[in-house]
Length: 231
Image: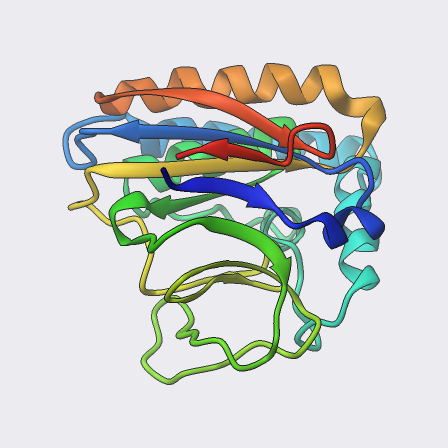
């Protein structure tokens, strides 16, 4: 049975890391999701208001900024949540991509946890968070040229190569979620133990929104005490 797992060495730099995983099979990523674009735009507006009220900086986003400094990574890369928040602070909105991506981006913005999503049918073997050797295959989302990770870079990977470079920065074109995706893996990272209860609420919200896409599945959490779960 395939697993979603965290390698032990990861906890040496992120000791409180917990990842919430939602695996759904048989979704409809064309007609499902309701008005996902409207949900996303509402989340953008709420975060913009929060950023304005707090002088443009939120400690829960800063957590990820600081965590990104703990491992080798591509120069200038930012955590997905940080990158989106910076755009929103400048008055931009996050554009609609497809229902599944819109929904997990909206949860990321609303609860201020990093979120990602992969086409589960394109994951080969286990989905693993660990450190790269530097020779793994990776083509960034929307590109055609290979861009392998640095040795020691924190990455999500499977048997075919890198799924996400620099932890929560850039996804692979190979495993992207598109309108034809039928089986999906959504996942959310928390690194602050003081936000555990918020994290549980956010995971429930992610699961509830994902069910709008149809299909069937479950939500699970992996952490230092339970570093793997079945996919």
